Length: 354
Image (tube, rainbow, N blue to C red; front, side):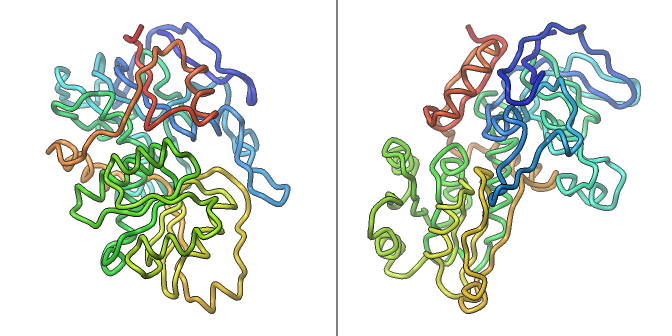
């Protein structure tokens, strides 16, 4: 088998040839068909995340072992299964839930494996999908994609699930007016599609890139805003029907976007921060109290939420986001394009692409 690995943090990915995988116990081996490329993969290659104020979360200090095959948005076909895996339809194509936990703790037993204290996330703690083969610990992580295009289904494992879980934290009165989305990359565009699929109001979208603002309009945003405009707050209020947006999702997670989101929130508004660009919170502590705002993080999503999302996706209700297919051998070049902001929507690697 062939894989694209991190051998040293801060260095380019390296191509490796390894023996074909053999399953044991409940394990399942997939032949990879498609592997989405995500900003988290950039953080993995870099070796950590900027926490702001001179602090850094270093993956080596958190026990991440190298070499590591990255990639957590994977679609594949089962080619082998361990003796305890049970019956699996090997004629089907599956998207993989990558946010695996220990499988035994209370959080895992209720389906919240993404919150497990001893995670085994694909492409982060164990080898992921930038490869021709992928090892899965248990068939419960496999979801039949039906007739979906694998390149369309792969991003559901991260950009789809992440936005779906974030939106579920805004149910109820927060959807009574258009929400504000900050960032029109893969997550933002997916969120626009999900809002439409859920029958919610079309959002207002803020992004510094004109091409991404145009893509957001094409995807169904009611309006787009340039955050660099001196009157950005007034524009947001006007686009949201003359009132500040009660719900804001920050898909960037930078200091500048966090400040914009907080400044745009009205009293009792809710900010869900999703992106991991890096930095420290720029908010005034007294203003959090005085505005009575709700600020919460949302990291990927649960196994239960993923099952719900795939059911919706299989009906065809979620329009596909723009995607570009690249050969697996071009994983490093594809990451560089993503880092430079030159990927519109989602990039997807395929061992079969040439």
